[in-house]
Image 1 (cartoon, rainbow, N blue to C red):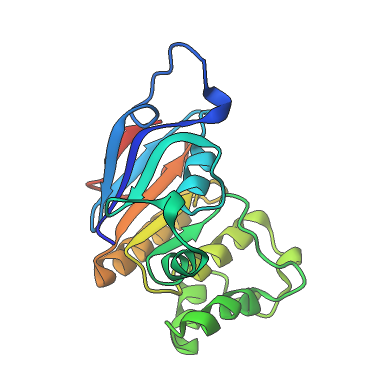
Image 2 (cartoon, one colour; image 1 turned 90 degrees about the horizontal axis):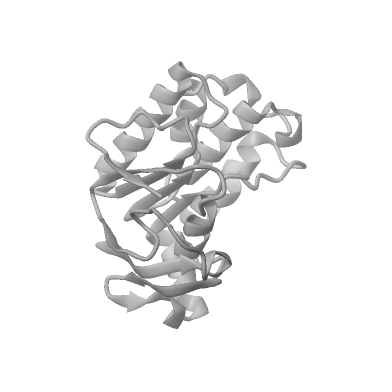
Length: 214
């Protein structure tokens, strides 16, 4: 996948509203593979909705969203499975960890589907993010910031053309923000992938990123 394009797209909940001032909604905009984007948004402007639309979780929008020119509403279940396993690595804002599984089990659950990283590589990511001692802890017992770092590791355990991150560092301090940014950028560069990261304030610290106001 080389391009994700939004054409005159608008969440249906915003239909009929006047004065929508956005560089995304009701515009023609594209995200290109290998490039980096920061989506800056205020609360309630549709940031998480946009991510859900791109990942195919929701379709309550007007206009079109296309992958390499194909309207995503035409994708079959099999094609969506392919997209989610090999083309878009997604971190939702709510992280969607299984609380009854350990931190490592949450990551391995995905990695068993992709066979993308070795156990040693995953353990190294836990170490770099300062949570190596939490690998055997239940996700439900972790702090929100620790859960966020586990979810980031899980996101990086797959091949992809785009890394889509919804508020990836909202619960992290500056040091962990920089570490996450470095790991995301390193992974993106290895795969030639694009990065799309959203934020309502605490931006992922990526240099040379195009900033887009939602």
